[in-house]
Structures are given as C-alpha cells and as structure tokens.
Image 1 (tube, helix red, strand yellow):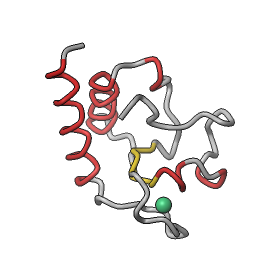
Image 2 (cartoon, helix red, strand yellow):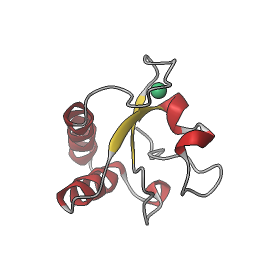
Image 3 (tube, protein in one colour):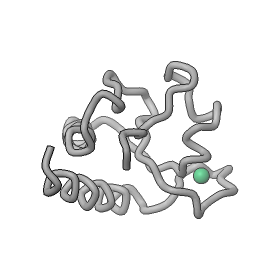
Length: 98
Ligand SMILES: [Zn+2]
C-alpha cells in the first residue's frame, strides 16, 4: 500500500465520519473529545485488523452503499460493553492503525 492510498483512506474516512454526523452518537457519551471511530451497530463480518486502512475504508463505503447501518462513536463509547452487543469480547472496532 502506497502513501497515496493511506492519505486517501485518512481523508475519505474523515469525510465519512462527517457524513455520519461528525460526532459520537451515543446519548450517554461523556467524552465527546475522544477520537471518533466508525462502528457497525449490527456487527460486521470481517476483521478490520487484517485489512489495510484503504481496504477498511472501501469496506465501509461498500457497507454503506449496500444499506448497512454505520454510526460514529468515540473511542471510549465504542469500547464500552453497551455498544458491543454482537461483537466478540475485547475486539475493538476500527483499530486498523488510523
Ligand atoms: Zn462517546
């Protein structure tokens, strides 16, 4: 993966976060300044840690195009048990090196 892909992934992901509201969507959030992550409320069928950042962003865009729900959560809310109904325990979303 080249530097260009990484730069594209960073920009496109930031754009997607903005499209999804640009802030943590958890009503119980107490840490709105924490880094934002993109979450699949219904879970996902791939491991983001196995993908490069540009592949991860392409998956997000594909999921969105297919009508799967995505949401923005801050790092703190995303790792909270209340937001991990269908995920393997301890697996952080969107931890692909951003
Ligand atoms: Zn939050």
